[in-house]
Image (cartoon, rainbow, N blue to C red; front, side, top):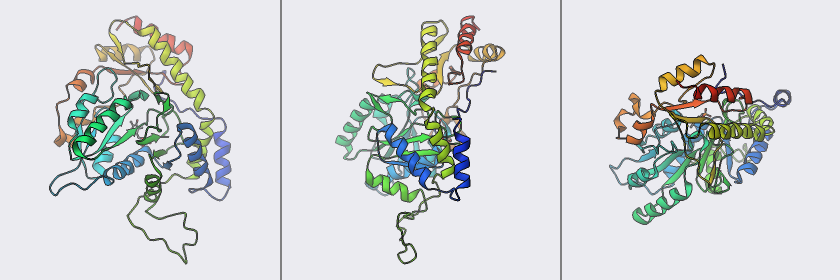
Length: 376
Ligand SMILES: *Cc1c(COP(=O)(O)O)cnc(C)c1O
């Protein structure tokens, strides 16, 4: 079976972990700092706070975003605009902060949020805007910036954007890496993401003040940089979590930094092959490719006709197929936020992803294309 996901692991990782294990210091230390510096270099933004998962980063990110806005009048409940087409972690982070979810519809061409629908749904109760660069294909951040300019002119405040970039390590928009566009950005280093640290994530901030606050809140609210804590005990101004990364995970992440460019290149080469081979093929519709952005192709989503038959055909040929994420809005826990989402309704049952990662060989991808072209 050609798998949809496989863990790309640097040959240097076992020794790197061994060194940390033998060092007598396995908690958050020098390796975490080194990993943060490497991430900062790659995404061209110095304000990187690693944490133990993207889920933690999202939870902390929503808190930072919502609490930097002016307070809501009594009786008005805060809400976060968000996409229903994502891993549940994106949206449960909103619930964890006691905020309501307002679903934004999906743009059928990109599988990202529909920016027209998003523009219509911003109100004075909007506490943050959550977007996902689905499959690693960037949302139009320029257009989103204009929408926010409009909201600021109309309502007198600018909701913070959180870019859930768990799919989008290495992606770029208008030549600048995702993570450097002035929003809060979240990366995942979970096992099956492009760059893995075993488990882990990063919260990337737009400025130093938010970065410092994120570092406090990832560890109980305690300032770890106060040296003389016995004679000079630091006060805790607001409670924080236990979300920090440790040196064991950071050393795996650092080792995998050595191979990440090769990993990304393979995802992109395989995607370019599918683009060329499947463009215009009957029964398959590819997603948008705009000139001003570069996808990281964490997955390769297509919209297919008769998906159950497509799935059977590829599974029988030894190829794993999946929609990867189930629409989040149909779960009982969020039923009270129900909304009409015609764009999502039109694509939800047609999305199918085929293997595109670094483990997919030239023969594999040819086999996948031949199988699709034989019909289902
Ligand atoms: C994987 C994923 C997450 C969660 O990442 P963890 O590091 O496992 O917490 C969040 N959002 C999206 C879109 C994801 O794909």
